[in-house]
Length: 245
Length: 265
Image (cartoon, rainbow over all chains, first blue to last red; front, side, top):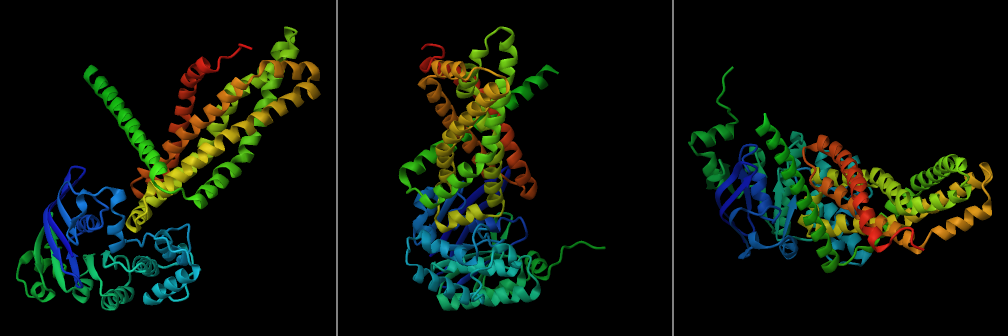
């Protein structure tokens, strides 16, 4: 469904992506691992057209979205939803209005339908009945859940997660990991998860790609990554910086 | 030393050209959006309430006290020459052609420009603008167009309000406090104020509305570096908009005087 071919992107003077190739199979969860600043989020945002590549192609269902203008990306963004690292909730709206926003924008006018869909989305992220809360009254984990509810309410075929567990405590992290897995099963959506959290990676992934120095350094199953003897991968998995006291 | 000076001047000039280019790009995107995207009426009315209705107090106070003090100062000077009856005409023409539009625009750049830049800047650094795009909503359609159109509608009305209050306050000060004849005041004011002055005021109001709106939106959209950036955006918006209003007013006065000449009755 999603294919990235020889993707290049320079931000400022730094070449962040230098020839990334990646294939994401429909219905599976792909995790993109990498150190902070390795370009994982930049790569993820290319998949929904939030970044335009300097070179290369991003194919969604065979259509190269890298050449599309902002106004031509509307149909693609109905297929691919993204959960932002901060949740990116609209702070001028309450929880219910945030989740209803994509529905209203897609032209649904029937308030009863909107209310039902919002309630269902909130139930899926374990926040049933929280429609009236405002974003500033939510914890970090709750903001991500509401952001996720807003992403899934219009049933995209693919869900992108940008650092879904960053900044959360271990219990909330585990809860989000289960939620990603549960939604993948329930919605049958293709998922791409960007993270540097190994627990999230091993819990959610069907396949894992490791981004290093702007390229995919490793691509395989979680088991293949677990048994790898490559020092770079081993150090990353075990969280070793290589420094001594 | 001289190369360093040239380099500094050149760098500033390039920066200025780049900024003008970015503004021109934003104007083009806004015009395209107005032409191709449906107007979001609810957002437009909300912005008219925010920008127009809620700015009235500051504009009314500015207009009234400027008119009052300008009337008094004009009287103090003209009285020595025995020209008390000209006070009304001078106050009205000045308010229509210069003071009304410029003061309204300066007050709006502080109240509205700062607010627009801060709001859009906050949305930018908290990924809310990217979230809009990810949902398939063009930020220009949703954030920029309603604000610019609301400013274009509201500002000429606020300019008219400012001028009206200024003339009213000037009349009261001149006739009730300083003893100028009401009949002379009104007769001369009406004789020397023409439809051209009113058109000039409204055109200037619209021009300044565009400048405030586009500069504030541009400052908001280019906000970066978290809270520090959000803090800087409104300050930049107000400073740049105020300077551009004052400078462009000079050229606009000469340009508009070709089409709406002063003093020909």
